[in-house]
Length: 271
Image (cartoon, rainbow, N blue to C red):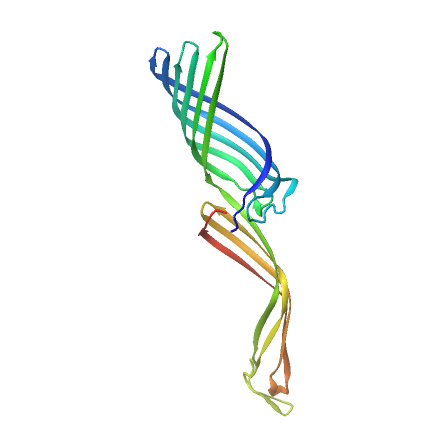
């Protein structure tokens, strides 16, 4: 598979809400540490426009401008368990931080790559993660404060199912063979004798062309697929058969052919 790396402009939105219940098990003058358990909700929607390839793949090469390439909409519902601390560095300067482990995440989302051959959008399902936050604020008055902070949230999601659509035209040639035999016994016909079991072979060859289509459903490392192909053909073969009857031509002609296959669930690399 050719390595692909693309760049695009993106825009979107995000929203989140968190509620915790905790208890301070350690208190000291100007400091406290507590444990908490809570719930976090997070959603985001991102759309990308335009696309340019910076590697060797053919995706987005040549680049297209203005068209939508990827849409992604995610919703995370997380159980969080962690520790929180608050330290007064001075009588007005305060450092607040919390670190949470997210042991359970329920995720629903769609990652739709419009330039790829997904039959349905790519999804994931569940996972775990961490949430880290720290804020440094200054009490301007007893009622007002200003501050600056940082946040790092990470979810490690398990791969969900993906369904790929593969289409491919084909053009070529084919060959076929057929055997003809007489199922009847020896028979006298117009002074000649038909020899029992006498027959002959015919061979047909010619061009064919058509297309094939397939769908692969992948969940984790397992892939289950089905494929079908159909072709129009012009293959014809003829030979003289049953010469004991004075010579009768046998002919077989193929004008179309098709196959349907199903791939069993097998382990494979994620696309």
